Amino acid sequence: MNKVTTFLLSSILCTTIVFSQEQESITKTELPSGWWQIPNSPVIFTFGGYVKTDMIHDFDAIGSPDFFDVSTIPTDGSKGEATRFNVKETRIKLDVKYPEKGLRAYFEGDFYGSGSSLRIRHAYVEYKGFLAGQTWSNFMDENIIPSTLDFEKPAAYAFARHGMIRYRHAIKDNMYLGIALEESNATGQAPQDPGKFENPLPDLTARFRVTEKWGHVQLSAFLASIRYRFDAGNKEDVTLYGANLSGQFNLLKKDKIIYQAVYGPGIGRYRGGQSVALDQNGNLEPLTDLGLTFGYEHYWNDKFSSLVVYNYGLVDNTDGQPGSALESTNYFAANVIYNIMKGTFVGVEYLRGNRADFNGADGTANRLQLSVRYSFNM
Image (cartoon, rainbow, N blue to C red; front, side, top):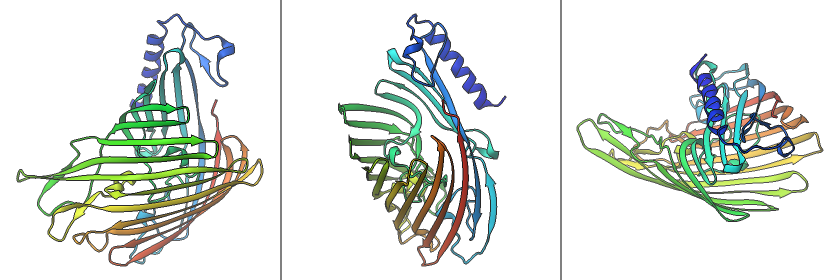
């Protein structure tokens, strides 16, 4: 039994023991569909997930065989073609609630851990408007994540999960403000003098969202810092910040348009990229990034749906970066999905990406992906 499994079983047992001390209970008729009640306890729970198999064929060389990360496309003219099968996106989840107290504990994992082991995606506890744990960054917009078959999602799209403490305040029924302190993991191009990068302070993130029948609009921002501590004893600090404008327009019965624009010095940390680099004098300065995303999801009928999404990313490179540093990316995906039932489908997707470097070199990759998913959400 591995550590993750032991943690899950222990958490369920502890939750049951603590909450069962309360004498309140929920009748069976009050239970939401797919939920169960722990005997003699007010606590309810559900579990679920899905099994997903991906058959991936690359027509060109790329450094990320399991997902379409365009930043790994070679720009030296390398050739390559390969076909693989991947089941790492297979997912499990557990949701536990104490409705009367406004308490919730949630866990979700997939198998993108080392050696295809179980990896924590989300694990948090909520109490009314407060949240503590790991989940989607407060800076991103989790409701417009493009429904690609590709696991990676667009290259310059704000897409990150962090450990955090978060609070959301409802201003109106359709409007809220969220503020969070999040784990900082910024990195960058190191100076020539030996030392190491540090993240001494958490990121401060904030979002404001308005939701209407036509969709929603969200404006978010972050403030962070990164430090390089030289072995000689001195240190250099750089301030990072950025903004994200995103939203969704609902069309017809189920169609939707999604959009996102992110910009700022250090924004690359929300896609696993570098946040700082060297100027011509060897000093650290933030890398200013721009990311634009536009997508349209269309339902042809109750069974067939399609998604088209395009993403463009641009880095304002510094004079001290090497010529091989990433300058821009393009990501395009288009799919057709046959929905057997909710969460269960068969789909095919075409992906095309381009990477351009600071020195003008570039590379392009094309991929075809066939996916089969069966959901067992309760």
